[in-house]
Amino acid sequence: MSLIQLQGISRVYGSGPAAVHALRPTDLSVEEGTFVAIFGASGSGKSTMLNMLGLLDEPTSGNYLLEGRNVAKLSDADRSDIRCRKIGIIFQSFNLFSHFSILENVCMPMRFAGVPRHEMHERAAELLDRVGLGSRLAHSPSQLSGGQCQRVAIARALANRPAVLLADEPTGNLDEKTGDEIIGIFHELVAEGHTVVMVTHNAEYEKEVQRIIELHDGNVVRQ
Ligand SMILES: Nc1ncnc2c1ncn2[C@@H]1O[C@H](COP(=O)(O)OP(=O)(O)O)[C@@H](O)[C@H]1O
Ligand SMILES: [Mg+2]
Image 1 (cartoon, rainbow, N blue to C red):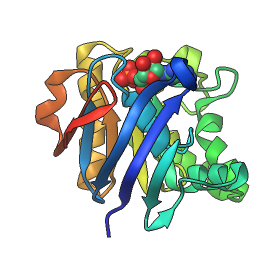
Image 2: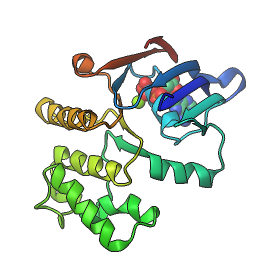
Image 3: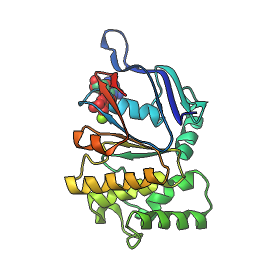
Image 4: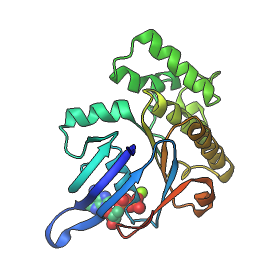
């Protein structure tokens, strides 16, 4: 069984003459333990696809099987619950809470999942240590560089041991060297068995991944 299976998944924004077919009906699957990149020009539907995969948005049609369960049409509460436990998401702009310490930021998903306080703090510290920030636990994101913030976001995404990590242009706000370090962390995670699906328009990363999905005007033209 594939970790992810999309069957005829589409997303249309708006309706009538103003309708935008951001993602045309798409079939694809992602196997556990692979590093996948979604490529395509600006406006080709990459974020739309990632938002579907991350249950941040609902498809207009189709089935989305995550670990065999159809999650395409769920109540808001069920969608939040699955997103919290099964999916780790990393954004271009990090989306950290600037008034909280990085330890608190990493604790956040575990708080939602009801992880006991002691266990939560221990795991958050472990995850931050693993991304090289073990000596900065009490710092706030504003005291860190962009690359460090993205490391915090990766640690946070891993907090609830998700089935899949999704990243939308994770290196988009970083210089080349720092971006490469983030890709290096993804490689380590994939080597440990994690599944990473990354949206990027940086063709340099083609050689870094095991699988390429390419979008053009809402159509998957390569997979
Ligand atoms: N909320 C929205 N409402 C209307 N159109 C949207 C919305 N989000 C994205 N689109 C449109 O859908 C298409 C795909 O967008 P997007 O998935 O963001 O592309 P990418 O991430 O590849 O740049 C674009 O034409 C974009 O303008
Ligand atoms: Mg985008």
